[in-house]
Image (tube, rainbow, N blue to C red; front, top):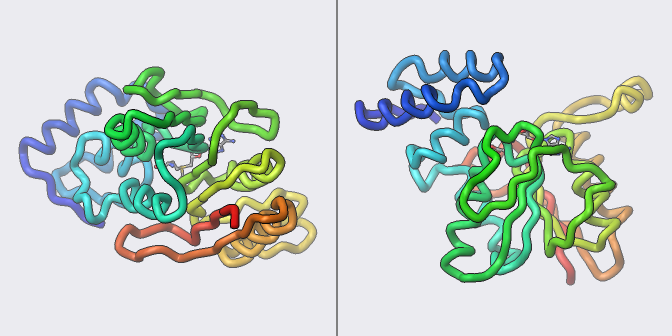
Length: 230
Ligand SMILES: C[S@@+](CC[C@H](N)C(=O)[O-])C[C@H]1O[C@@H](n2cnc3c(N)ncnc32)[C@H](O)[C@@H]1O
């Protein structure tokens, strides 16, 4: 998606960079400076989208964070204790969840990502660390929007703990080196089949795995895989 920002919007963006660009790793900070070097913005990459969302510069009907939130609401309610894995540098999806939870006066949202550049944000519980199979915590369900390498860990963790989940796959593949050496072909399709099989073969009885390709307008990078109790 291409965006044209007006003067006021572009000023907001430059102000954000002025205050926060040093918090990003050098490569990411250079990338942002280049992406935000004019009022014509290429709004496709997550690191760019997170900032545009945080500054309320993304059109609502094309905002992938709102799109995924609406998707999740088909299966789950937000008045729960929710775990988000791989939120990114800024907790964009969690920000929208938190807004709704405040209206509901119920529910919590916790985010894990080693890339987080904030240590406090609203009511969101931020964990600047990697999520692993050893991570503890009592959550009602787990979500991930393009959580990349964490995808398999989320599925295995959720199945070990009998938790429901919904993950929008990132569109890339994250096979281990050994799997690639043993002949796995790294295509988006083979990765989707792989995670679907892991989810199905390790899930508890009485639950189902749903594979879906949601509304194209939000530019979801891949399929969405959800575990729901029947
Ligand atoms: C493609 S980005 C998506 C970020 C965000 N969800 C978005 O859509 O804007 C993937 C994120 O997953 C994070 N990630 C990968 N493995 C992780 C793990 N084990 N625990 C927590 N975060 C992880 C990365 O640090 C990165 O920020």
